[in-house]
Image (cartoon, rainbow, N blue to C red; front, side, top):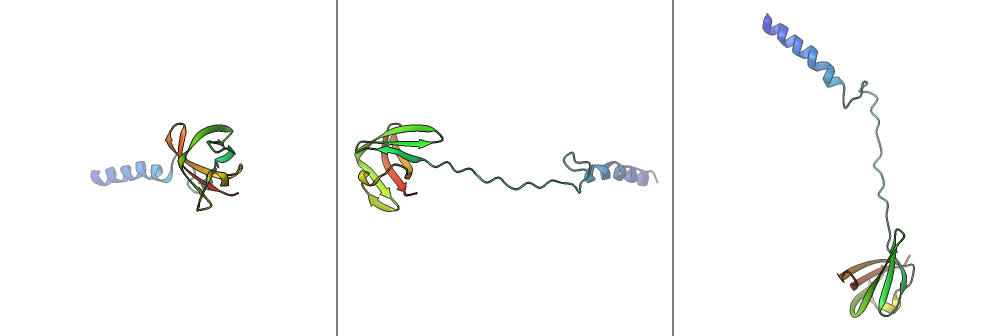
Length: 108
């Protein structure tokens, strides 16, 4: 008999805790939230010369040096620095913090 009373007491003690989830007093009123859409921050060519490219992202501008060995791709095709235009979306691969080894650009 004492073991039955202990079992009943344990159930009575644990049952309310299992009905309350994460601090909610009413388990049927959970709020569902939609996952947030990631914000895309495009890097855009601000200006380009034969020896340098200036890119902007989130109101920050950086200038990198271009060499004769810099590989350039525009819209998936091999290109030259002359094919790069301001406003293009760009990705750069750096040799070091100031020099570009690869530039991949897409027309808007």
